[in-house]
Structures are given as structure tokens and as C-alpha cells.
Image (tube, one colour):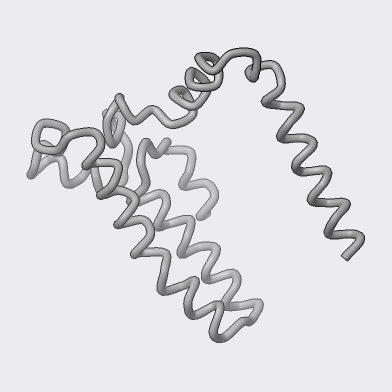
Length: 125
């Protein structure tokens, strides 16, 4: 328990130190959040090999859905595709299951999440 508290304190302190320079004004905090989560740019960039880019060949997603709807759809698909591996790991924990869940969740995020970069496939690899 003491070790857990030390680790938690270290993580929270590191997070606070990283955010401290931006906490002088609310506008700066919002600017950082807009850059971290670029919702206004749309679901995907031009040439990412995830499901949204592939589906865009048939349905022009950026023209049909608003950015907010794209965000919700992306969240729903990402969550639904990583849920089975997480449930199985929770019900039947094992080292092999943990490795499978890591790969499965990484693939879910690569294929369905919002604003995926092509380097994110390296995590799966």
C-alpha cells in the first residue's frame, strides 16, 4: 500500500508539474486541450490505414456526419471492440490473456479511434 501511494504521488506530481505552466489562464488550458484532442479536424487525416479511411471510399464520412457525431461514433466503436477482450481478461485472468488483451485493445484503438496516426500500429506490432 505504501508503494502504491508513492507511485500515485509521483504520477500526480509529474502531471501537475507538466500542466503548471499552462494553468495561468483558462484560455491556455483550453488551447492545450484543443491541441491534444483535435476534434475540429475530423475523424481521420488523409492517409491512415484505419477503418474510417477505408470506409471513406464508400461513404464520405466528413461530409455526412458532424465532428461531434464522428467523435461519438468513434468512441462507441472503439469501446465496443475492446470490451470483449477486457471482459474475458477480467473473468479469466492469465498472462497469455493479458498479452492478448493488450494486442486486441491496441488494434481497437488503431482501427476505430479518433485521429489515429500511422505510427500507432507499432504498439500492436
